[in-house]
Length: 117
Image (cartoon, rainbow, N blue to C red; front, side):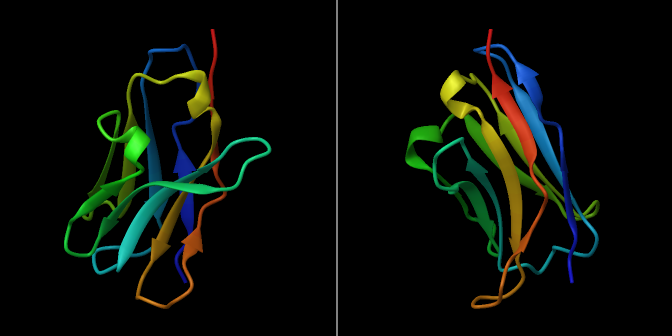
């Protein structure tokens, strides 16, 4: 069982930046995949970024270049650096850890990001 706690969300002006953190209760070093998802009001949850066990990052095409996912295995923490934010990035952001392929993934409780002037 892995518990995930996100932090770092908040209100930011268009063009601003935020860094989200996701602290895991256990080691994520050997996880098959760690990821960030988001869900905007009235929309389905979508994956914005992920890192596979081999270290390969993947991004939603429209976010590539603005968002960066990273991990600190020593701190069991996953980060999402978000730059040049715009109102369309407003959503609840969730971290997700899948320890093994085919195994149910763990979710955090989410952190709200609001981009508004």
